[in-house]
Image (cartoon, rainbow, N blue to C red; front, side):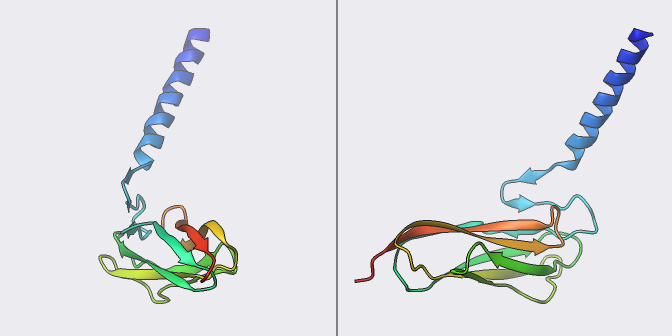
Length: 141
């Protein structure tokens, strides 16, 4: 009886492992939709390093992407991690194979290193994508 129970448990564990491993796929910055009802981002980059920037002078990063999914990509929101980071994004659906861009403008009041994010909500696997802005703010002279 114990042997039968053990073999049943081992088989169930094996089936779960195989099922899980088939649902995860990620190749570099390319995200592949596992579900045909989802779009997918393929980013040119997800982090922008401004380097040294002057205090109180807005700077903008552009993040280009392509919809590599099989359905139109719809971005429902883009939110900066603070009031100093303001994103702009396409409001119309991006057809499969088409490209677009998201811009994020950062205006620093505080001097020093920064690391800010923009959270994108869309009809992609996981529902969100995160873009990062970083750099160092210097006193404006």
